[in-house]
Amino acid sequence: MIGPTEMRSACARVRRSHDGKLMGSSFLIDNRYALTAAHIVGQSSTDGFILEFPTQRFNATCIKLNTSINCALLEIQGPVEDVVPLILGFDVAPGDTGLFFGFPRGLEAGVTIEGKVQDFITDPEEYPKPVILVFPPFGIGSDFIGFGGSPLVVRDKVVGILSSAYVDRDNFDKSDRRFLFFTRIQDALELLPPEVLDRIGPSLSPLSEEPRETPSRNSILIITALEEELDYLYDEFPSGWGELKVLQDGLSYRRGNFSDEIDIVATSARSMGLVASAIVTTKAIKEWKPMVAAMIGICAGRKEKGVAIGDIIVANQCFHYQFGSYSNGKIEHELRVENTEPQIVDIVEHLSRRSNSLPGIHQSLSRGFKKPNTLLQCHVGPMASADLVVKDVEKFGEALEADRKTIAIDMESYAFMRAARLANTRWAFVIKSVSDFADASKDDEFREYAKFTSTKFCLQVIQSLVGGWR
Image (cartoon, rainbow, N blue to C red; front, side):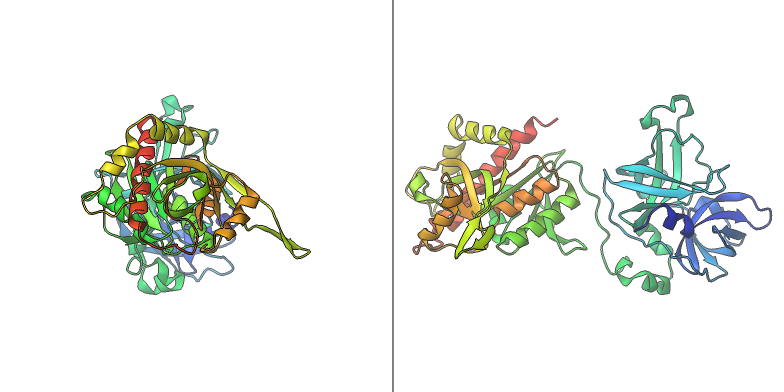
C-alpha cells in the first residue's frame, strides 16, 4: 500500500544545478527515471538538475518533455538504490479520494495532502487533453509553489501529475476558489522509452490497451444475464448506440444517449448465475457510478399467483433461497434479502394501474410478433434466486419455504441487487418478464415477447425516475 511514508521516499525536490534554486517536485518511476511537470524544467532540455530524495542526491537531465500536457521525463545519473518506485495506473473517477506529496516553499520535509477528485475537464486553450481536477482541503495555505510535478495517488497507483493550481486569494475560504490540475498518467506515458514501459509493465503501454475512459456523471446502467436480453434495448435507440467496447478488466459494453444530459450504458454477464451477475454488476457500477441501475430479462413465474406468460415482474425484494446450512439431513435456510426502494415501487404501481403504459406496450408489438393470448399485466412481489435452471415445479417449493409471497424465480436478481447495494446505488431495481412457469413444459415460445415487455416497461420506469431527478 502506498501511504505518506512510501510517497515521501519516492519523491524528490528538483533544483537547478547551476544555482541550486528549488523548482518543484518529482517522483521516481524506475531506478533511473523520474517524472515531473514540464514547467519545472523549463523550455530547455539541456539544463542540469539535482534531485534531492530524503537520504540521497542525484544529478539528472531532462531527456523528454511535452509542454502541451505539461510533463517531463528526467534521467537520473544513478541508479537510485533502496527506494521503491511508484506504480502507475489509470483507475480514477470523480468522487475518488487521492493523496499528493510535494515540497512547497518553507517545508523541508515536504507534505502529503489529501484531496477529492472532482471532474475530468478539457480546456483547449491550455489543456488539449483531459486533466484531473482535484479540490484540496481547507487549512493548507494558499501557496502551492513547489508542488508542481508531484504525484496524485489513488488506490495505491499514480494516476496524475500536478501541472498547475488555481487559488483565488481574495476568496480563499471558499472551496470552489481553490483547485489543482493533474495531467492524467496515461497521457504522460508517451514520454517513456519502450524499455521503461516494459519494466513498469507492458499492460500500461498505450499501444497495448485503451486507457480507461472518463466515467459519465449522469448515466443509466442496464445489465442482463445474457447478451440477447439486450436486443430490444438496442432497438429503442437505433441511432444513438456506439460500437461495442471492451475495458481493461474485460467488461464489454455499448453506450447510447438516453437524453441530451444522460447516457445509457448496456452490458451483460454473458452467463447465467449469481456469481457472473455479481461480478459484472460490481465492475460496471465502479466504472460508471450510475444514478440508476436496472436488470432486465426473463424469469419463471408462479402461476398460482395469477402470473401469466409474458407478464412483467417487478421485484420489491430479491432473495437467495438456497443460502443456509445443512444439518440432520436437511437444509436450514438463512434468508438473504435485498429490498427495492419504496419510491421505485410507487412509480411501478402508478404506471401499471393508473396509466396507459401496459396497453401501450402490448399495442407497440410489430405485426407477426409471437405473443400469448392474455392481457399484459405487471406484478410486484418477491423474486427468488439460485444457481440452477428450474424445470420442476416442486423445486419452486424451496423458494416458497423462504417467502410464501414469492411470485417469480431467476438466477441473477439477488446478486445484482446485493452488488448494487454494497456500491451504494440507491436507485437499483429488477424488472423481468415471465417466459415460463419453471415446469417440464418450459420452452422458448414466448421468450422474445418476455424480453420485449421487460425492456419497454423498464425504460418507462427509468423515464419517470430521471424526469424528476435532482
